[in-house]
Image (cartoon, rainbow, N blue to C red; front, top):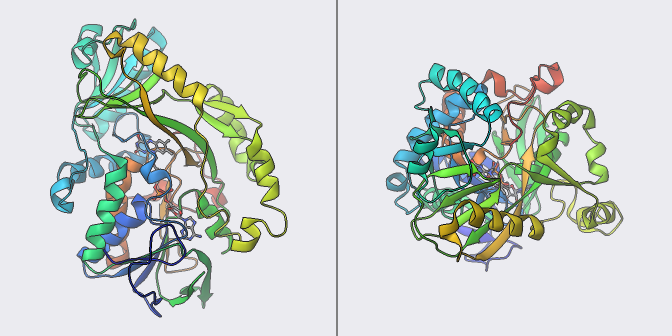
Length: 447
Ligand SMILES: Cc1cc2nc3c(=O)[nH]c(=O)nc-3n(C[C@H](O)[C@H](O)[C@H](O)COP(=O)(O)OP(=O)(O)OC[C@H]3O[C@@H](n4cnc5c(N)ncnc54)[C@H](O)[C@@H]3O)c2cc1C
């Protein structure tokens, strides 16, 4: 693959020369940037993809790996359905094993209030033609053999699936590179030049690239890129911890939430395991930015957040001082390769809950744990847009913990939109300007 590591963690694989001009510059080589580069290259448009760190070094390889339509906000349902169709043929399309298993997505109900919420969601699925249905307690047991925690039923979407995050973005990148895209690792975007209301160049740590099109898919750093253009995006980050276990007896291919945990089992028997719907918020001074957008959602979803005043607060203060990594790298690059600490206590508790809910798994152990910074927006849905000011800019960010599943369709949508000049579906609800317009709905779910 044509990957150049300018300053990053990989060895320089060929002589580094920054192209002077590119059809498109993509900022961020997560699943969004890699998929966009692939679908563009497939149609003959060769992107230069910059990452300040490395391909899929952040959220895109740290996800649980759920690929779901179930539980989606109605505004992103059309994207989730279209993405599901792409997932069905993705291993063949990318000529790669992606760990894809179409075992469905299951939310297990432990009380009547939960079941009532699931039932009310059925109307959204029905309107969009998704095969979501309610399950009885017996049907839940049939879906997850060995699940013994008390439960009274569930919400189930058989057409949903799971895949291996560590395989997918790199597979997109590999195929994109084979088709002529260029990936430059360890080279961050430092600014965007605009003239006459149009994008004219990307300024990078390695020099300038003249271009008419820039796609901002910089994950949790997208708000910084947009701010450099005078556009405010109320984006923040929360911390989610995930563990991989050793192999246990098969409980099927369902991706499930229940018994206080979220899990999926790979075909080798190992689990990806996490808390069912609770994340950590490491409080920093940065949380004062855009706080007004979050007061309502925080109150509405208070149970989902575990607020922590810890070393991250001091790290954030240090990053504001002269000679800090952020000051040296510049604000758009900031900390090049943020490494978040896993919540050990929480993941140990999740393992105990797994064993309680499924006694057949009593021998599984945690073999690896990690944390990822989930980028969130206050209305719980992403921005996917080509704003008119400046023209030539496209934005795909704020996926609020659902973006792995949407990655393929987001990449394809960006590519088709850039090439034809028209969005391939109605994306009005996901427009960037909704914040400036104050046309923001309460979140359906935050992640
Ligand atoms: C713990 C966890 C669990 C999750 N579980 C699921 C799940 O089960 N299902 C699901 O659908 N989604 C899940 N998600 C969400 C999903 O992983 C993300 O929505 C998705 O990966 C976002 O992809 P991205 O390309 O937008 O961002 P990222 O993968 O974060 O990539 C952004 C890239 O931009 C780069 N960058 C930033 N600034 C610059 C700059 N100035 N110049 C150049 N490069 C820059 C970064 O280095 C990074 O590589 C989960 C996320 C986490 C963290």
